[in-house]
Every structure is written in C-alpha cells, then in structure tokens.
Image (cartoon, rainbow, N blue to C red):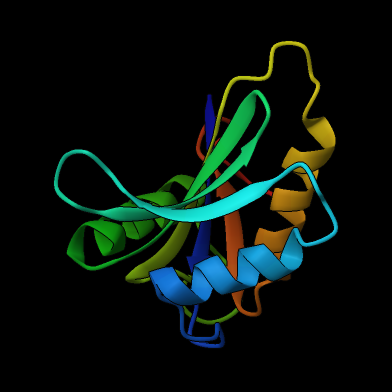
Length: 135
C-alpha cells in the first residue's frame, strides 16, 4: 500500500466528495474494468471514492480542516519549501491510497491516478514514502 497527497492551493477548483466522484468517473471512463463508487468508511462515517478493478483498488478522499493544515505545514518544513507564494494545501487535499500490487498488474492504472492528481490546477502532489514532490 502507498499514499499520495494532492495538496490543493488557492488556484485549485472547489472539491467535495461528489465532485471527486464525478471527476474520477469521467477521467477513468475509458477503462471498462473499473467501477467507481462513493462509499462510507465503517468507522466515523467518512466517505471515500473507491476505484475498483478485479483484484485491486484505490481509495480517494477529499479532506479539509485543521489536521490537513497541520500535515501541510509539516510537509512544507520537510521539503524546506522555497517555491513561489504560499505552500499549497494549507487546509485542503485529495488523498489517494493505493492497494498492494505485488505483480505490478495495475501499474498503468496507478500512473493514470497520478496523472489525475497532477492535472488538478494549483495542486502539488506529495509522496510521503519518498518525502518528495511527484513531478
């Protein structure tokens, strides 16, 4: 399992669970094997968009608030941010949690998800496993 954060800046469009569901459904519409749905997590009622293939899935959530802002501040410190303007993601992000794919059967689908995140205007995609920005 690995995680990516799409840290949303001031130039990013508005997001919600429903908008994320619509955008991901459209983005992956050419892949007949994927099912895209909005599901409630078993604890806490938080909803996530789930992209499911026959033996693999990605869970994607829109998150905002104080804990997201704290995480973004920590990421900014780790990266020693010197980019233009304020660090993106002061309080909003898209979090993608990728399932294990030991056989690398779903590499193309993972790359497509990364392409989705990097295409969001004003977003900065951060890989916490590598402690680096995804270009």
